Image (cartoon, rainbow, N blue to C red; front, side):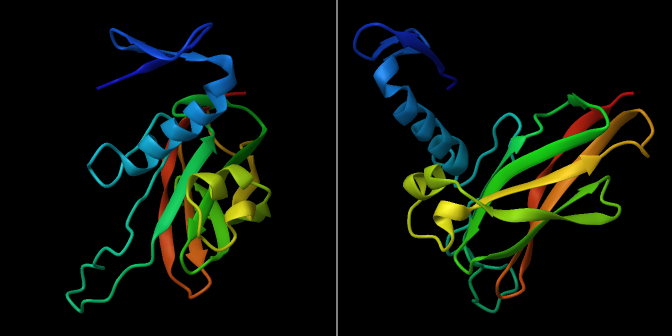
Length: 179
């Protein structure tokens, strides 16, 4: 089911497939929406427009050894899918892991990887999913230079390495490079 969240003057109420929310509750509604996008509606994972979301708390690693993969949660705030970018562009989002995050990296078309700055102030993340190391400082960002790329569609991919050395894909976003 898809919901449209709009600002209203009175109490929150459902109108068809719209949910009217008073202005004073918009912040909480955005956090609730982010939680739904992160954990899905009963599916265990989800993805939203412009996002790469991963939810694997306590899931089996698939190796058959019974070892558990540490939980990782993330969101790519920018760029949005099929966003047009030119020259130098700042990509940003957040990531947390039960083991803590050592680094976040970005790549265009999964060629050479660049390190992103990690540790940006994101208290919203800790409020949304408390209990992760670095939860208040889970933000990452990097400058992506498109000057050497041909015009057209490309994939901007992200990955994170935990403090224990586990490298996990954070997802990728299609972008359009123009001059």
